[in-house]
Image (cartoon, rainbow, N blue to C red; front, top):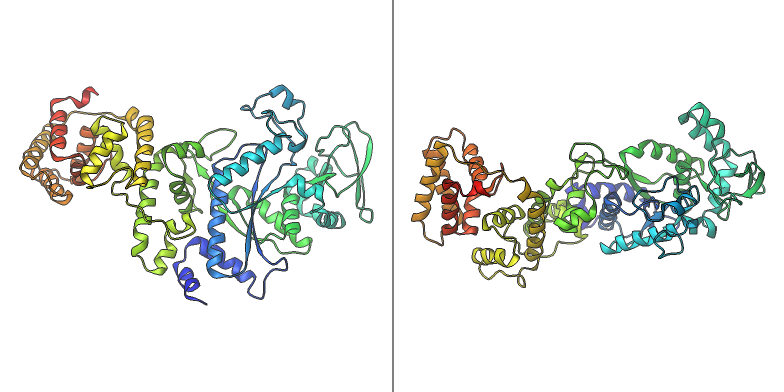
Length: 527
């Protein structure tokens, strides 16, 4: 084992642990197809969303970790189930009446309501590919329609037909009594209506490769299971894809655990081994409920990217994927600061810690050098105290705190200032609630003003912080956390805030003294 693989394994980072399972799968030799295949899936009836980004990003992390442990080539497929029948017209689409006329048809046989592509499925596929390309994912795109119609799936579809009874015996125990009577692993495409039919198979001929069924008008039809004349039911379709493409790794959400189990059983019936897998937990909204596309709760990827970088989102997705996590606006500031902190410490870490560093997997490489001397949270408080959302004004304070800093020399910080301004306007400012100090707090603030007035203008953050501590201690705060919370509520209108020594150094001694005096006079409560 070379030193890179040894250090990566010692890190115990979860992508490496996943990659280790794949490496063990091929310890006796490479796959017959010559490469290791990672797959992610996409339901083409809707637009790409944060779950799509999450699954592709996490799979890409595992794929990169695999490259540390093995020299076997690999591919990442993003598979679009665009042959699925449209069951419901989403409310946010144009031409509702037209789409309603095509309910039940494969997405690639429905006209594009936006008028830009040859079909609705092609439109959504283009959106998916543009979405993935936006984040520079290294992937190959596969369309279900193309795979079915080109014959890529034919061999496996015929295997399913030959093993028809064994396959349905896996699925039937999981269905209700009525559904068992009509279930078939094959969904014929009706030759008359063009719809994907959920009808029972009346007869089957494995030698001829055909099935018989009733079409949408009740007439008996015979069709081959090959060449795109049928598609498979969901769980069978997943196993079919694993077999036909020889998929080696695919992760999925906790809500699909039963589907993974059943599809794995079918994959074994077809003569193969299910892919290695990883079950991740669901994202939760502000109320702790599971995020749902139909409900529209939670946070969209475009919303995140209005307030923070894609790297910060990838960092958040990396963390604890087996734990349910809130995905709401209030997690953004910490995710941003934690990402930059991880990237900043990477160069000073030993190899094992570097392979455990989330920033390494965000970039699939050592993170780029970035000089970000101020946190996102600090910027939010600076914008508030400066009473300005003009980036030029904010840079005025920043350049004094970090000598020589500017948009050109610190492009990453400039980008973060833009994000912070947007976040402040939409979330911080509307929620602010200032209050007046109590008698005890007033005396402590007056002491702090007197102490700050004695300091030189270039006093550092630690010196200033000592005076902040002393002001609270000398006025008998039983718990200094209460003193700092009071400062946050009185000066910033919120219960949490920055490290005060660092903030005062950033904002400026004279400006901070003015802010304290405004708070004592009641000017801040007038905001």
